[in-house]
Amino acid sequence: MNRTTLNLTNTTFDDFRYSRPNMADVSQEFEKHLSIFENATDAVKQQEALAGIVAVREEFGSMFNLCYVRHTSNTADPFYEAENQYFDEHSPSFEALNNRFFQALLSSPFREVLAEKYGNHLFILAEVSLKTFQPSILEDLKQENALSTEYTKIKARAKVDFEGNSYNLSSLLPIELSDDRTTRKNATTAKWGFYADNAEAIENIFDQMVKLRHSIAQKLGFRNFTEVGYARMHRSDYTPDMVANFRRQVREHIVPIASDLYERQRKRLGIKALKHYDEDYKFSSGNPKPIGTPEQIVANAAKMYHELSPDTDDFFTRMQEAKLMDLVNRDGKATGGYCTYISKYEAPYIFSNFNGTSGDIDVLTHEAGHAFQVWSSRNFLFEEYHWPTADAAEIHSMSMEFFTWPWMHLFFGPQTNKYHFMHLAGAIQFLPYGVAVDEFQHIVYEKPDMTPAERNAVWRELEKTYLPQRDYDGIEHLEMGRFWHKQSHIFNSPFYYIDYALAQICAFQFWVKDRSDHDAAWGDYLRLCRAGGSQSFLNLVKLANLKSPFDDGCVKSVVGEIQDYLNSVEDSKF
Image (cartoon, rainbow, N blue to C red; front, side, top):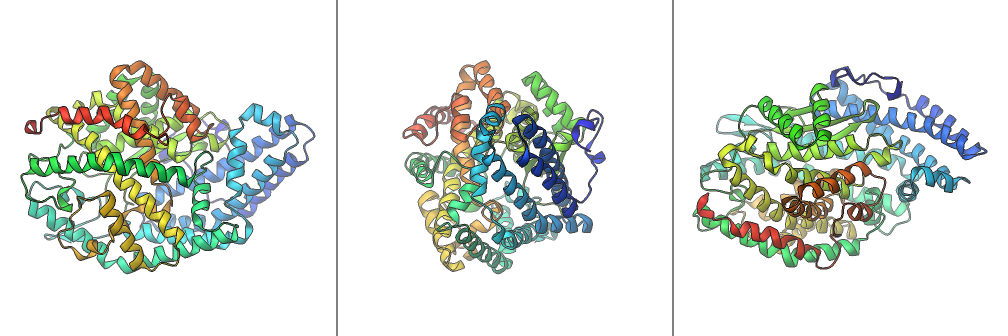
């Protein structure tokens, strides 16, 4: 059954039926429609065959994502633990089917007609995807999936004992932001004690990942994994050299601004030296915290999206009615936040770990930006067009954080101005870290034979370049360069992290435009969302009337107005 035969109006997430795909049946059905496509005598018949291929892909993808949501919601559930393992083992086989589909698509004698109907970007994505797979790496991909799952489980099942209580990594965060500095230090030390206890296991997982990914790259005919990583991210219009130039701009123009902001913070806090456990504690009066229960936060979000636009009102109403959000932290739940899409039910799904900090609002608006985008482009036939590449996708999420600024009083009341300052300053301070993560990965995959200790040393040197304020107060685990162990993207989504930095520069542009002409800014944003993944990153940036982050001078020009805003705020008001 596909979505065209489902009544989506009254269905909720609880009604979404999961059924493990039988790979033999999936392959048989896929091959049937692919054979029709390859032997079609005209473009119309090929389009009919494409509908069948899309239905098979949609069913498999929907079951994969449904399993992913239910597994990450409770990593201790034995049923979905087994189902997740099944997908770890069989997703590469499905990738092999997609590989054959892409080859057939590119070889179609009616390619021009199909490109006219579906857009040429589908063919560009097919060409990029073909670079990342061949049958000889099937077992390697299974092993890579298994290693990724192993890392996720270590973090999801963390237990940190602190002052007589047991915490997971998400629930400990409010303690790390305590108004009492000693408590912050001790809570942070306890968290890193968990990572220290698991350091050998984490480094072993990553060492296996790096060597495995290098082997995959060589089997695919590449010098190292960097080229494979870029192709996996479907980057078609920029190169590692362009990214390196972007990092240079951040190093030259953002690092000094971020350093000044940390110095302002030190003075606000009235301390002699800013330590790593102080960095996220922004004000001596305490960080702004959201008002109300999670249910009240969602109710206020509904009011916000109702007032923002008719489109966001329809979208968020559906998210509530269909129970498409799992927001609150609990034991056994995977860390972090994400948005995925279950296409069979036209259902975006938001996952987060509310813990009573301002991050609850950040993650809600961020993931709602992703969800609204995929909701806006859900009518595209191909899944490749439901989402853009991650670099463009993060523009939607990060910009939504800024478009919702006028409603932050619903969540922070009299602390709204404090939140605005912290949010904008935090976005600036994120950029150096974001590009440090990216440069770390480029170095690691350039030299895959480095030892774990050598990788740690690389990270520590990058911190000194991009995060010169960082003072670990003698914690040996961090002084050794192991902070990166916490960053899931490095393990599970290699080369993803730069997308946040690129998108942040674009989101800053929306912040500037929204302050001067909301209607124009929102129109550009809505057009961007509706385009989905039908164009490349740089073409989508152009479509939204934004400057490319890669252009020399872009970073400097974008942050000027932001710096003026931050400098206009008197720290004494906090």
